[in-house]
Image 1 (cartoon, helix red, strand yellow):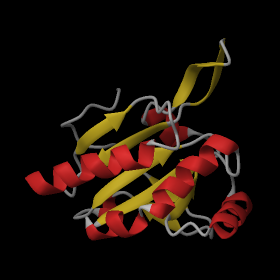
Image 2 (cartoon, one colour; image 1 turned 90 degrees about the vertical axis):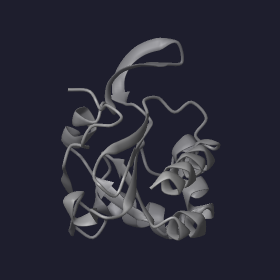
Image 3 (cartoon, one colour; image 1 turned 135 degrees about the horizontal axis):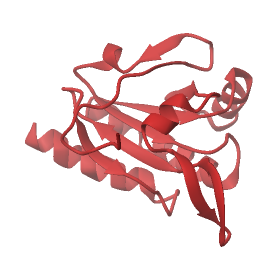
Length: 159
């Protein structure tokens, strides 16, 4: 079932960079930004992560939690977090199960060729656990965090 705005977000529990489980249910009552990205410390993924980092104070002010999800393991997440001083949680989805459930893994175009892999996408989930906004394919990774923040501020203003 695809992710639909206005519908409950699929629940999940994934390990963070230290192996501790993080569940969507445990974040109920807060806005949650779940962004899916292909790989730690690659150019587009770094620009996107640093964009979320640079706006962290504004996400915090909107009572939002940012979660980055990739197939990378704990060690890669630890290095990526330390190298770029990322103030948010990165989650490990090596089996890509949550990515598949959220439509963030599958067929995509890369350099003009069809391939299967992680689809850069983001889901904004409201404090009630309902999907407020879904960006199915993020094209400009560097600009995307600002767009998410603007949508969050709009959603928070309506809450």
